[in-house]
Image (cartoon, rainbow over all chains, first blue to last red; front, side, top):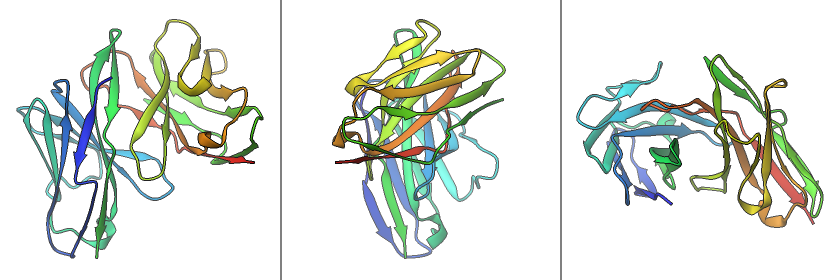
Length: 117
Length: 115
């Protein structure tokens, strides 16, 4: 099946610094990728849709200037949390859709645990 | 608009017992429905999916789910629970086709399996 990787798997940073998270589709191309945020014991909340070659589409309530998304190639999307604060600590998961049996199916990365001190 | 409701945030079963995790959906268009499993500090793994073909869908690890349009349900079942089934399970819905393919997730059900 399709494989999506994320890097780093975990990161600890000081308040006020910026953190970049990479999401890669390893064996397929993805013109679209999705970024989710998951708080402890909660569901996944879609933050934004990353579009290769164009601007990301953000969900309502997500600050686009704080969560910068760049979809530089057909296999790489990055999420940068700018000026991170403790409330940004969360589990960030990306996914990329690809067609299986004619149906778009999303494949998820293993997630990145961000802890802001 | 689409939404998913998972009844029961926590379900506990004994090893060997039937597993039943409930999912009801709301969708104004024909839905595609998914069940995902998440182990601690990991991403999501697809268990099975309904894509308007057979209403009874079989997935990995012995799980299956039945799409019931009249009940707007897509409950997940497994005849006999294993200790390794302990995890968080998410039901999700999307509308078929389309490049954006947004998934709408339920709030999740944490399955505990008692020895």
